[in-house]
Every structure is written in C-alpha cells, then in structure tokens.
Image 1 (cartoon, rainbow, N blue to C red):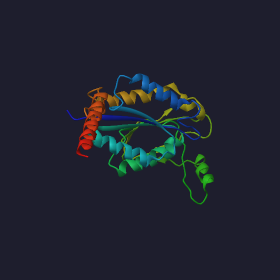
Image 2: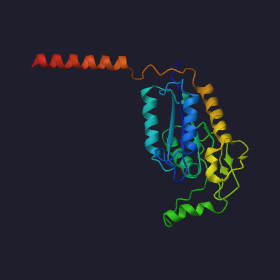
Image 3: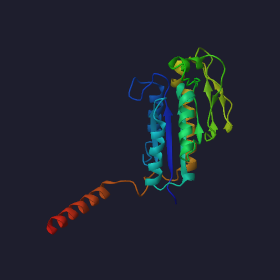
Image 4: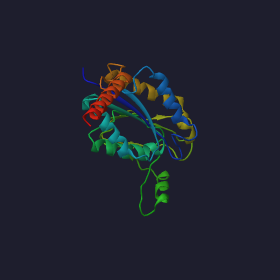
Length: 235
C-alpha cells in the first residue's frame, strides 16, 4: 500500500504569534494534538503559522516530505484552518505556493476572514482599508472545499469567500471578532473536517517505513565508524 500523509495547518490572524500569547488558534492546535495523538507525526502533522509566514518555504518542506516518504500526489492531503488575516492573506498566499508546487488544499474551514489588500502605494495603510467595503476574499482554485464561519457583531467581520470550488453555507456565530478564534463551534467543525480527511487518506497510524528510527541511526553510526577505521588502516 502506498504511503499517505495529512497536514492540518492552522493560520493565525493579525497580531497573533505561534510563540506569543495563548489564543484560540493555539487551543485548536492542542485540540488536534489530543484528538490525533495516536498517529505518527511522520504521517499526520499539525502546524501553526502566522498570517504572513513564508509560505513558499512551508511548501518546499512539503516537497521534501513527499520525496522522503515517497507519498503519491493523490495520497497527500492538506486541511487549512485560518482565522482573520489568516483567511484574507494566508489562504490566497499559501494556496498560490501550493499550486506552484503541485499541491492542493482538500478542505478549508475559515473563521471570520478579514479582507487583506496588499497595496504597494498605500503601504501598511492599504492593508487596513480592506476592513471597510464588501470585497470578497478570493480563494485559489486548488482550495477544493470551503466551510466558512463569520460574525456580524462588530468590525472587522467576516467577508464572503469567492471560490470556483465547492463551498458550504456560511455559518454565522454570535461573537465579536476577537472571540471568534475561541469559538467552540469553529473548533468542533475543524476537528470534524480533520477526521474526514484522515478517514479518506490515512489507512495507517504508523510512520512510513522510510522514517528515521533509533535503530537505523545506530546502524548508520556503526557504518560510519567502520568506514573511518578502514580509512585509518589505509593511511
């Protein structure tokens, strides 16, 4: 049976940081870790990134994983779970890089996406003009299925999603924007979507046979020692 791989990738919003103050995206990561702790991290990985991360580097890592573990393209699945600017900037930027390297996001569960306008002339101010108006957030066509959440309690609030792929009815929640990443409704839907991906793509909880192990590393060490001994004798 060919190897499989699933990535659950959470993308934070503005002023959130994977190493910073605890927030709802951190909580979702912990939820994933607890729910799927019996899977090898060489088969099922969980990542948390900032909204403006170096997504090209993230995708290059995926290329290396696919090569190292010999995962066929059709057995490589990605779930995206973005919040705020993670939706408005993260998904379009990440999706562009995924497409460039031949990947697709099988499912995306965006939470209260804030529109991001990358305006060179206006600079930082240009990005904030996206809070006003009614522009929809355009998802790349390699984001295959979307389940959006939004609120209308305050500003900024979730924008509509424009996609050429399938999308479920948007779910409105009774929270303000800064509470949306803590919403239990969003967390539960993310876990449900992750379970669906895993049922479809991961027949085994075990690591691929090509994954590094202590035994293999000791064997490499012994081979290295032997090679040095032979080299010493030749001298």
